[in-house]
Length: 322
Image (tube, rainbow, N blue to C red; front, top):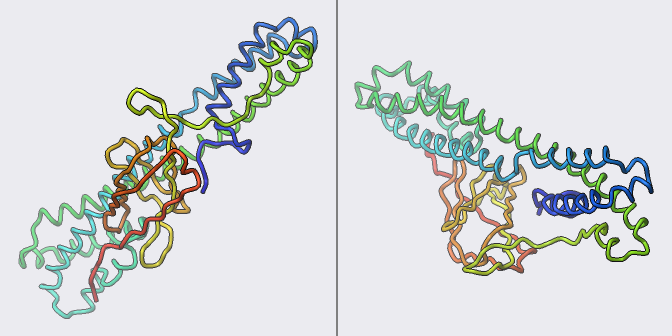
């Protein structure tokens, strides 16, 4: 399972920033000793480190970008499922107008909806073609009882879904770019910090108390969360979301821990991860385009479950057709 916001060194970026700030504080105090030891470790070097710290802090946090991505993902899921429901309603009237007429039914996308229901890009194209055909036969459909409101609804949903899909992809791209920039900036920060630490261990070789200020404590710190009035180790919630029928992974599924503010989305491998969960027993809700809403209660998450991974399988929305 891939974990987000961790560098190849295995230290969380927040931990790297904490270490860098602490070492920089000691470095400023002992600057004269460092410059005498190595002229390059000068006030200019200190300014470089300050600038790099500011740079990494200015990059939007991943949870902020994830929240923006999830907002767009939720729109896609909502518009998609509403559009699918509207298509199913309209097909009732199509079959009244063209009973047993396979040529006209195929013009309305029978049985293509089954094939595209779980793929955003294909569903968007299907809806655009569906709306064109719907307007072509609008008069006779209205005569058979289809409402103008339903026609307007599917027209708007088709457009809204197209827009939401574009915005979702832009949010994912922005997050991807920010992640790359963040990793690069933290690597550069770590190199600056490591240089100071290396020199500090030599400068204060005979002064263990001061030398301790320049030891890179890279032992990972487990995240903690507030429980009542105490700090406890956080639980990890990670796993994969798959299609119940094909066992293929599902990208962009919304995974929510009900009763909390925690939620996330699956990546291109169908994987999800969050590590700031208060230990306890929860109900999990998962939604995805073209799938029935999923809930599972009694999911126990403890502070020592780092190796535990969950697999949730979603059932497709049933679409009947010729």
